[in-house]
Amino acid sequence: MNKKFLKIAEIGMTHDGSFGLAKQLTKAAVKSGANVVKYQCHIPEFETTRNAPSPYYFRDENRFEYFERTKFSYNQFQELHILCNKLGVYSCISPFSIEAAEMCIDIGFDYIKIASGEVTNMPLIDFLAKKKNLKIIMSSGMSSTDEISKSLNKLKNHKEFYLLQCSSIYPCPPEKSGLNFIEVFKKKFKVNVGLSDHTITDATSIAAAALGACVIEKHFTLSKDLYGPDASFSLNPDEFLKLCNSLDYVWAAIKVKDVKKDIKKFKVMKKTFEKSIYAKRDIDVGEKITLDNISFLKPLSKIHSSDYRKILNKKVNRKLKEGQPLDWKHF
Image (cartoon, rainbow, N blue to C red):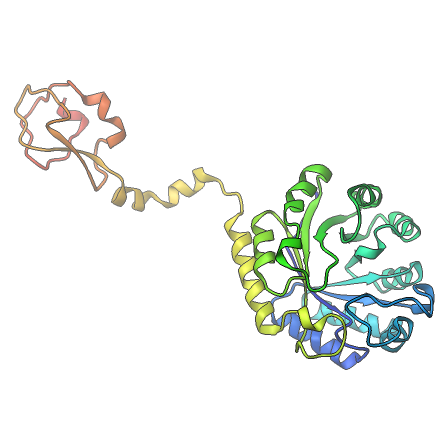
């Protein structure tokens, strides 16, 4: 099961239709530690009716008109993909229709992200299921376990696949984050698991990494005052950089290591901190070793303290001075 550790900066619609701002956000996200920059591809006529209601967290304008006003062209998305690769990071995009997916795949985006609301869009899922060479990231969002399972089973054998725990609440309070699902998804689906985090801090993402999430997606903005549905609960560059540094730290800390190899590195430390057996007082020739005439002291010398039972009741063959380390040749 192919796996990478991905720090996704979700630019989403924070660019508000400004291609220049989208490029600026991309560069800032990379500078702030992201190794994946994510966009959204909306082609309104293939995605929504003209009078579709807006979500509760964004009612400033008609949804269809908003997507029409803020959408990017094929060439613009292609330029963003190329920019990501030039900056040494992966590009990622969420298509919200088959037509959008066709364009994103043709451009060559490194990752295709299935947004929460698209998990049950089986025409889109079936279309993507045929493209076995894709690297897929899927948010669980508002879907039931059975709905997730139905789409996941069609996609999990792709080149790479990641399932993200996600609560479709904007912003999301900590008690609704559902971090327990990271372990549930790992055990139930046997796939790479991550978190799409809509909380207003980095704490939930860091906790998710410690619980085994190998992907963290967080909304990114240059300013929380920017227009749109996402900016207010996004991280700014300084906050995102802090998060990325913390994620790198946690992922390094939980890597499984070969203890036997590490023991060799601690040879000098072991000599300094571990204990050997020393004479507690002068010991005469022929005297038996007991717990009364020996001490267990640093530094490590000839007989390790763990071997003390091997010398108990043995007679010494020479006089030993107080504080002298015992040696096997003394018996």
